[in-house]
Image (cartoon, rainbow, N blue to C red; front, side, top):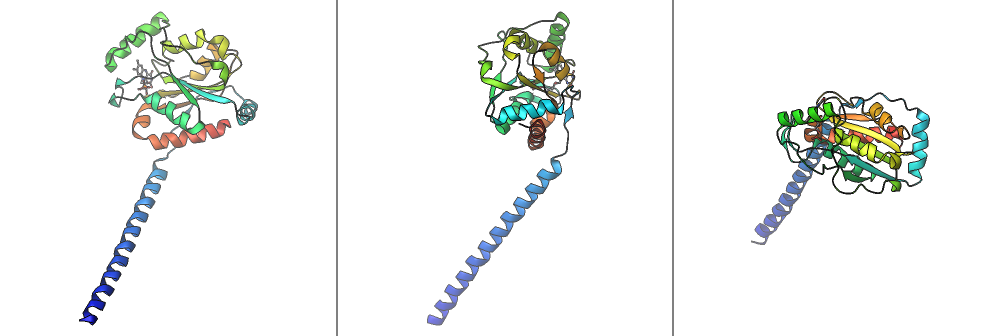
Length: 243
Ligand SMILES: Cc1cc2nc3c(=O)[nH]c(=O)nc-3n(C[C@H](O)[C@H](O)[C@H](O)COP(=O)(O)O)c2cc1C
């Protein structure tokens, strides 16, 4: 009887060890798989725009930011029906803006229209945006712009609309021309194939007294569906910028 009890206890201990070993091995395998998937999907899909900036600008910027200056991410973004991604409840540009903020510790400010007449459906939105562009419209911005004097470096992002910044972004550039003067501006876009679409040159033209660094374009569908790869590209980009 005592011998039977001894064998039963011994077998139970063996079983516990065997189960623990199995569990550890499954967890480790899963971890390796997800790491290798992440590496495989982190392809370089960055689409850098042209820039007239030199390395000197970037290294000066590095010094400034390492001295503790604050960074701001200003962006415009739409939800509803969008190209290639269906109906979304978080805009493509908003996702990239959030990643930049997380990776740099930047504050964020979303530009919202004072009168949001933009349609929900993609086709209707493209018509309204084209009309705005043809008219050179300057849609009013809702709310109060943050105090830009607190920031030396400002990322500015928006979707490409008909090969250009949405017109509301020019409202922001023009109404804040003085406050943006002397700042370091870094443009980014989300798009469906057009890349940065000259956002950097257009930003330089709109804000001639600012320093515009190398911008980056991200595919809107990647922002929605390939977020970790976008994050890797953001990390590489801000490292190249010296931030
Ligand atoms: C009005 C309008 C015009 C667009 N024009 C372009 C374009 O010229 N080139 C391009 O690559 N994508 C274009 N797109 C696609 C958007 O740039 C893309 O879907 C973007 O990621 C949307 O970002 P959001 O969700 O932040 O608004 C356009 C989309 C809209 C709604």
